[in-house]
Length: 200
Image (tube, rainbow, N blue to C red):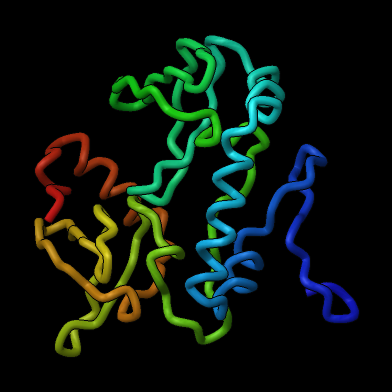
């Protein structure tokens, strides 16, 4: 909120570029009806396919650049190298696993927008607030359990623990955990034993 109660649907990033404030946008449409959301979806789909928008975006990067794109399944940004720029799609190679993907231009986060969505005060987490690779915690029969999100399902998150435990937990029962030391342990464990984070 800005002074006077006006919603700030855009913010400035570190490069001085005006970008969307996704948290505020989500809050704005939270109480919208299904038809309202459908109407917005139609308008947004039309904008995504506009040749002039695609052309403008194509001019912002070159083959060989390292860019990030948004992965819907992981709800997170993925770093990749641009291999080819085609008319409607761009061929990229994942920096970590070297997989190649032919993706639409609108997947690309060229302006380095902050894609995270943050819950409000006392608001429970939803699928929109979490991403694969994040640390979370939950309570199971009085025991505090911490793990890493490995998949986002429709109603639950699949969570893996360092002892190879696998859990499906409702989003509203989770909370985010910030622990650099624990995150490093997960990173080391993944490199030594990929089965540690088997998706449920």
